[in-house]
Image (cartoon, rainbow, N blue to C red):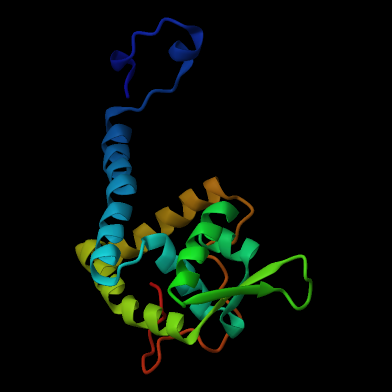
Length: 188
Protein backbone atom coordinates (compact mmCIF):
# COMPACT_ATOMS: atom_id res chain seq x y z
CA UNK A 1 0.00 0.00 0.00
CA UNK A 2 2.61 2.47 -1.01
CA UNK A 3 2.53 5.05 -3.78
CA UNK A 4 4.83 2.83 -5.86
CA UNK A 5 2.12 0.14 -5.79
CA UNK A 6 -0.38 2.52 -7.37
CA UNK A 7 0.02 4.27 -10.67
CA UNK A 8 -3.41 5.90 -10.69
CA UNK A 9 -2.80 9.48 -11.86
CA UNK A 10 -6.10 10.84 -10.48
CA UNK A 11 -5.89 13.64 -7.91
CA UNK A 12 -7.56 11.45 -5.27
CA UNK A 13 -4.97 8.70 -5.70
CA UNK A 14 -2.12 11.20 -5.71
CA UNK A 15 -3.44 12.80 -2.50
CA UNK A 16 -3.84 9.46 -0.69
CA UNK A 17 -1.65 9.21 2.42
CA UNK A 18 -0.15 5.82 1.47
CA UNK A 19 1.19 3.60 4.23
CA UNK A 20 4.86 3.81 4.95
CA UNK A 21 6.81 0.54 5.11
CA UNK A 22 6.61 0.67 8.94
CA UNK A 23 2.85 1.30 8.84
CA UNK A 24 2.33 -1.47 6.29
CA UNK A 25 4.40 -3.85 8.43
CA UNK A 26 1.97 -3.15 11.31
CA UNK A 27 -1.18 -3.25 9.18
CA UNK A 28 -0.65 -6.54 7.32
CA UNK A 29 -0.42 -8.79 10.39
CA UNK A 30 -3.48 -7.05 11.86
CA UNK A 31 -5.33 -7.54 8.58
CA UNK A 32 -4.48 -11.25 8.67
CA UNK A 33 -5.56 -11.46 12.30
CA UNK A 34 -8.91 -9.87 11.48
CA UNK A 35 -9.47 -12.55 8.83
CA UNK A 36 -7.95 -15.64 10.39
CA UNK A 37 -8.79 -15.45 14.12
CA UNK A 38 -12.60 -15.47 13.70
CA UNK A 39 -12.28 -18.46 11.34
CA UNK A 40 -10.11 -20.35 13.84
CA UNK A 41 -12.58 -19.68 16.67
CA UNK A 42 -15.47 -20.68 14.41
CA UNK A 43 -13.74 -23.94 13.51
CA UNK A 44 -13.14 -24.87 17.17
CA UNK A 45 -16.74 -24.16 18.16
CA UNK A 46 -18.19 -26.04 15.17
CA UNK A 47 -15.91 -29.02 15.78
CA UNK A 48 -16.26 -29.25 19.55
CA UNK A 49 -19.76 -27.90 20.21
CA UNK A 50 -21.65 -27.93 16.90
CA UNK A 51 -22.42 -24.21 17.08
CA UNK A 52 -21.19 -21.11 15.30
CA UNK A 53 -19.16 -18.39 16.99
CA UNK A 54 -22.13 -16.04 16.57
CA UNK A 55 -24.44 -18.58 18.28
CA UNK A 56 -21.92 -18.93 21.10
CA UNK A 57 -21.83 -15.16 21.59
CA UNK A 58 -25.64 -15.07 21.67
CA UNK A 59 -25.82 -17.86 24.26
CA UNK A 60 -23.02 -16.30 26.29
CA UNK A 61 -24.63 -12.85 26.32
CA UNK A 62 -27.94 -14.36 27.42
CA UNK A 63 -26.20 -16.43 30.12
CA UNK A 64 -24.88 -13.28 31.81
CA UNK A 65 -28.02 -11.15 31.41
CA UNK A 66 -30.42 -10.62 34.32
CA UNK A 67 -32.92 -13.45 34.25
CA UNK A 68 -31.02 -14.83 31.23
CA UNK A 69 -33.24 -12.51 29.16
CA UNK A 70 -32.51 -9.72 26.68
CA UNK A 71 -34.54 -7.77 24.18
CA UNK A 72 -33.75 -8.98 20.69
CA UNK A 73 -32.60 -5.50 19.64
CA UNK A 74 -30.21 -5.27 22.60
CA UNK A 75 -28.93 -8.80 22.00
CA UNK A 76 -28.27 -8.01 18.32
CA UNK A 77 -26.17 -5.03 19.36
CA UNK A 78 -24.25 -7.01 22.00
CA UNK A 79 -23.60 -9.85 19.54
CA UNK A 80 -22.58 -7.37 16.82
CA UNK A 81 -25.12 -8.71 14.37
CA UNK A 82 -28.13 -7.43 12.51
CA UNK A 83 -31.60 -8.13 13.86
CA UNK A 84 -32.18 -10.35 10.82
CA UNK A 85 -29.02 -12.40 11.47
CA UNK A 86 -29.94 -12.70 15.14
CA UNK A 87 -33.48 -13.84 14.29
CA UNK A 88 -32.11 -16.64 12.12
CA UNK A 89 -29.68 -17.70 14.86
CA UNK A 90 -32.39 -17.59 17.53
CA UNK A 91 -34.63 -19.75 15.34
CA UNK A 92 -31.85 -22.39 15.13
CA UNK A 93 -31.27 -22.16 18.88
CA UNK A 94 -35.01 -22.47 19.54
CA UNK A 95 -35.12 -25.68 17.50
CA UNK A 96 -32.45 -27.09 19.82
CA UNK A 97 -34.41 -26.02 22.90
CA UNK A 98 -31.73 -23.60 24.10
CA UNK A 99 -33.65 -20.33 23.68
CA UNK A 100 -37.24 -19.18 23.37
CA UNK A 101 -38.84 -15.87 22.49
CA UNK A 102 -41.74 -14.08 24.09
CA UNK A 103 -43.13 -10.54 24.15
CA UNK A 104 -41.44 -8.18 26.58
CA UNK A 105 -43.72 -7.80 29.61
CA UNK A 106 -42.81 -4.10 30.02
CA UNK A 107 -43.50 -3.27 26.38
CA UNK A 108 -45.20 -5.79 24.10
CA UNK A 109 -43.75 -4.09 21.02
CA UNK A 110 -40.42 -5.73 21.87
CA UNK A 111 -39.50 -9.40 21.83
CA UNK A 112 -37.27 -10.95 24.46
CA UNK A 113 -34.90 -13.84 23.91
CA UNK A 114 -34.70 -16.09 26.96
CA UNK A 115 -32.00 -18.69 27.61
CA UNK A 116 -33.45 -22.02 28.73
CA UNK A 117 -31.86 -24.27 31.34
CA UNK A 118 -30.67 -26.51 28.49
CA UNK A 119 -29.20 -23.46 26.75
CA UNK A 120 -27.40 -22.45 29.91
CA UNK A 121 -26.04 -25.99 30.23
CA UNK A 122 -24.87 -25.82 26.59
CA UNK A 123 -22.99 -22.53 26.97
CA UNK A 124 -21.52 -23.69 30.29
CA UNK A 125 -20.28 -26.90 28.66
CA UNK A 126 -18.98 -25.04 25.60
CA UNK A 127 -17.17 -22.20 27.40
CA UNK A 128 -14.11 -24.20 28.58
CA UNK A 129 -13.20 -25.28 25.04
CA UNK A 130 -13.71 -21.78 23.71
CA UNK A 131 -11.58 -20.30 26.48
CA UNK A 132 -8.85 -22.88 25.75
CA UNK A 133 -8.88 -21.82 22.09
CA UNK A 134 -8.72 -18.10 23.01
CA UNK A 135 -5.88 -18.85 25.41
CA UNK A 136 -3.98 -20.99 22.88
CA UNK A 137 -4.43 -18.62 19.94
CA UNK A 138 -4.06 -15.25 21.68
CA UNK A 139 -3.40 -15.08 25.41
CA UNK A 140 -0.53 -17.57 25.70
CA UNK A 141 1.24 -16.05 22.67
CA UNK A 142 1.71 -12.75 24.52
CA UNK A 143 3.65 -11.56 27.55
CA UNK A 144 1.77 -9.75 30.34
CA UNK A 145 3.08 -6.44 28.99
CA UNK A 146 1.92 -7.32 25.47
CA UNK A 147 -1.54 -8.24 26.82
CA UNK A 148 -1.83 -4.77 28.33
CA UNK A 149 -0.67 -3.25 25.04
CA UNK A 150 -3.19 -5.38 23.12
CA UNK A 151 -5.97 -4.18 25.44
CA UNK A 152 -4.92 -0.56 25.05
CA UNK A 153 -4.59 -0.85 21.27
CA UNK A 154 -7.93 -2.65 20.97
CA UNK A 155 -9.65 0.03 23.05
CA UNK A 156 -8.14 2.84 20.98
CA UNK A 157 -9.23 1.27 17.70
CA UNK A 158 -12.72 0.45 19.02
CA UNK A 159 -13.11 4.09 20.14
CA UNK A 160 -12.45 5.12 16.53
CA UNK A 161 -14.96 2.58 15.20
CA UNK A 162 -17.66 3.30 17.80
CA UNK A 163 -16.84 6.65 19.43
CA UNK A 164 -20.07 6.79 21.42
CA UNK A 165 -19.93 3.20 22.71
CA UNK A 166 -18.57 2.27 26.09
CA UNK A 167 -15.56 0.03 25.59
CA UNK A 168 -15.27 -2.52 26.93
CA UNK A 169 -19.06 -2.93 27.00
CA UNK A 170 -20.57 -2.52 30.46
CA UNK A 171 -21.23 -5.79 32.25
CA UNK A 172 -24.82 -6.88 32.73
CA UNK A 173 -26.27 -6.02 36.12
CA UNK A 174 -26.47 -9.63 37.19
CA UNK A 175 -25.19 -11.74 40.02
CA UNK A 176 -25.03 -14.83 37.75
CA UNK A 177 -22.03 -13.90 35.60
CA UNK A 178 -19.98 -17.05 36.08
CA UNK A 179 -20.12 -20.67 35.16
CA UNK A 180 -21.61 -22.81 37.94
CA UNK A 181 -18.87 -23.96 40.29
CA UNK A 182 -16.32 -21.60 38.76
CA UNK A 183 -15.17 -18.07 39.36
CA UNK A 184 -14.60 -17.52 35.64
CA UNK A 185 -17.00 -15.70 33.30
CA UNK A 186 -18.90 -17.68 30.70
CA UNK A 187 -17.13 -15.78 27.91
CA UNK A 188 -13.60 -14.41 27.91
